Length: 220
Image 1 (cartoon, one colour):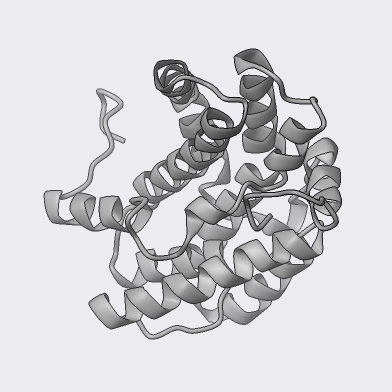
Image 2 (image 1 turned 180 degrees about the horizontal axis):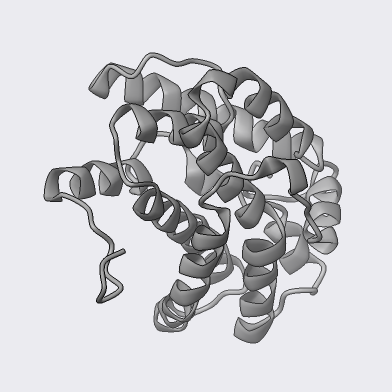
């Protein structure tokens, strides 16, 4: 960031990054709820305040934090991609969470290689994003903030559909989480996976329960 707190990113790089995290990018992010569908189904998340607390915890202590750290590690350690990818898979707390990162990662690899020529395949989603960003020389602070914003926006969209929550309330919530996205991105930017921990137990358990949920819209 510069002295005014603004991220330094060229316009073309900004547009590339915007395309990567756009809902239109064909990785199927809209099909995954990260266990939130179960939390809503059981009543654990029933209104805007519940959703805010749930998403905030996942972002700060769970999948948001760990994904951001793996993005940064992949970006900063290009010679350790395989090891980082294996650790990212090990951090998946359930079969569905592993499916989530596997399938989105494979799709991201496929489309990004086809459009930008970044050679990669069969990587988990955050590792693929980090590798592609390094190849394209995109600034890591902007990459992490955009990645986390897309992560938050996707979870909030689940709440908007299933609680249901109005669009104005949903987007107010996304807006209030911008500073936390930046804080988590800043803390993860060095990619220090050796001390990485996760403590979003309710989200992890919800993702496990979702595997046997009778009626569901989302894949996870």
